[in-house]
Image (cartoon, rainbow, N blue to C red; front, top):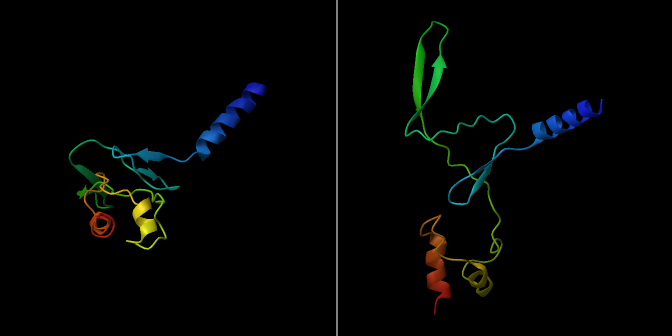
Length: 110
């Protein structure tokens, strides 16, 4: 009976756990309940649709670019202000050169 209780506890806790995808650039995406996610390394991916008349139709599917929002230390600060300049970390290569990087150069670099 104890082993059955332990098995149920592990099964229920693993069923309630959320799935998180970790990307190579350090960003993450938390999969929502009942959301369909495909993990594939192929260069092209297709979605199959079956029709009642027996026909099959394939459509090209593009990768998802969804990521979780991570709060930044400069959120809520006025861009270009001394507090913002102190909190902002420019040139994060994961995002490329951004408008905030340009604002940092104009406002914060002497």
